[in-house]
Length: 85
Image (cartoon, rainbow, N blue to C red; front, top):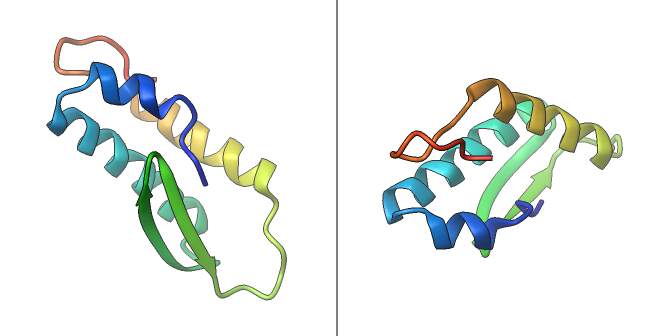
């Protein structure tokens, strides 16, 4: 999985904000895939590697929509109050 526009977040965020953003994404991915996922790892540059222990194929469009929904619900912000989209 790759976070869209991660470079824009990296440029704008402090180190702490960037780590926070990555944690928010990792938490959302884990929540969506918790019953189907064996391992999640951050590979860098906004890329998360996900290893599934499920025999059934995963639908990437559904996963993306669910992860985005969870992130939207959190209304995460930069320290200055601007939305962290």
